[in-house]
Amino acid sequence: MGNHVVAITGASGAKYGVRLIEILHSIGHGIRLIISREGAINLKLECDITPEELAERYECTIENNHNLAAKSASGSAKIDSVIVCPASGTTISKIAAGISDNLATRSAIVALKERRTLILVPREAPYATVHLENMTKISQWGGVILPASPGFYNNPSTIEDLVDFVVARILDQIGIDNDLTARWTGEEVKSE
Image (cartoon, rainbow, N blue to C red; front, side, top):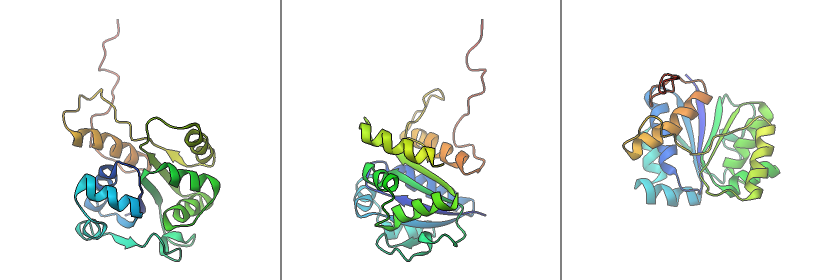
């Protein structure tokens, strides 16, 4: 099974991170959890759970965002992917500038240097030009920019359906088969 770092930062969209953690745990993957101060605020507001409760519920190893000596910061640690979900504009900007002043940004930069899978899930709307430029840099360096933009072709009926659409795309990027949402088959529209 894989080992993944999941960082929840200050953008709205903590539900995406929580659902991702739930799925990874359910299939036996190891999770190292990093939650920024602002991420903890959104986690409580949006999901009514604390970082400690989340870590306990899904058997995550929680790491302090201020501890740059944590395992997630190491290039020699066995980590398969780093997923920042949601990724705030500030976190993206720091990564693009090479600023590793906390564990979330350090883990992301280590993922880039080690050629690990790095996935950033921004949830801003609209994007400022500086966000677009920073996301372009990270993409050019091999990072995956996966906006929290759910599709509607599968006729979602709940918020959970919308969240699952995005989480399914994250899982696809780290090579985990899933059936969280209906996939496009090409047969949805009859050709004439």
